[in-house]
Image (cartoon, rainbow, N blue to C red; front, side, top):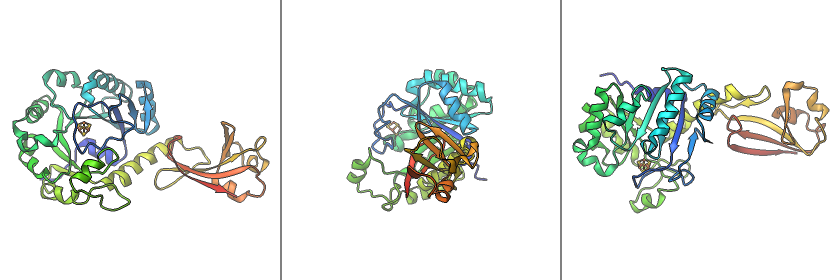
Length: 328
Ligand code: SF4
């Protein structure tokens, strides 16, 4: 059988999915939960890295990355099902039926829930918590998977690569796919990781040593996809940042291969220095008392431009600042 990744995975690999974190609330207490302190247990909504509070903001974030789909995640999204429905409906209305929506849930949705999601959510990714894996075919998750497939949803499980993940092979006939995420060390699960004797692969990456091998026995099955932590950072995130950067970069922003943007800033000067003005209006912007321009203008005109100068590298669309390099 040919290995066909789920549609949600294909769009995610292209960086074309907006990640809509619908709530940090969750009734489960999985020891490996990867949520950050900022999000865990908080009833907050994020579209990619931006905290939002309305569907309009979600639409703007999706537009800025030319999103072809949305992955709804949490926390437990179905504990805020009204929100899931509201956001999915607006996204489908604005971007059309073909805007692919996948939903993560650690619950086994019943018929009424599935009916309310029909036509809004295309793919359901259930996460049975690890404590029920050895008994999973007798849990509600398999029943829910069957029901959801009958109703036309594409249905899979999405789980972390724990030593016992191979047990899930027995339920593959009931699923369209199984996504196994490399186990990731995080600020909120570090104590539990240490208690179990797990260690990160090295001092730079947060993947847990051995996790890839635990998934290996089952990942040969064509329905299984192993998603490495490095792939998420180096491919998915980079592709998404590049999409946002292409839509939002100013003429003087340089887009890097990682999807970040680089530009120069000048502070503590009166008006626009002539050395910058000479390059034309599209090559600078004055905002919040600072002049922003191309980094190479600062480098070339270093002597003619006074004030405090620096080169900034950050995520596109005024995202996280990665580096600030002072220019003498
Ligand atoms: S179900 Fe998901 S969000 Fe909830 S505790 Fe488990 S891993 Fe964390």
